[in-house]
Length: 288
Image (cartoon, rainbow, N blue to C red; front, side, top):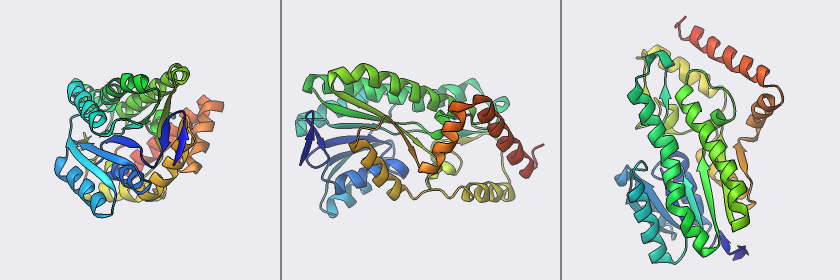
């Protein structure tokens, strides 16, 4: 069992994962359990969360499932409180729950904006606020927030998603600087294309604002496949290796770091590439 400033990496540790019933969250929960972590699978989809936890238990790991809406701060706070009462500690808080809204801003309603801000941004804020003081009191802990490559680069066609993910990146790296002197770690995940349900109409709770034909959906699927989405289980393995090393900004697969560096070194080129990608996609879909 390895220790670093009180935190356990990962055997014997306790972790809460929001959005843990599917996709990245499920893969991270399962990988944490394999590494000896006591995992709380928190999700609005309780039946799926329960199955994930049950499967982990059947494999010899430690896990439990709870239903939670991340837009409800009190509910998250209660989960953290009950977890610490049960295990005596909280090593990791993975604020992973998120949705996608696909479509041009001209198709948005203000309700769409409020919806994605509530889940993708306020959900992360709620998770941090629920866990942070607990971690301060115990003197250790690691907060891991899920953003996206879309939080580091322009993303026309998914403007609201990119907005929330840029905010999560800014929140995370700012909090990291503040929390470090208090013994708390903060990392932000910025995945490229990962083979999860969010690639299909924004996931279960996401939205596509423009009705697409079967042919257009097939075109989108083929366009995504060209990026060779990473298997979520492999992604989780690599993520936890980076978390163990306390990496600040975790961009995976590694090849996507090129887009991040382009945008950092030459923002105008990053905007050009984003614009061209969007325009080419619109042409292929017959929308221009």
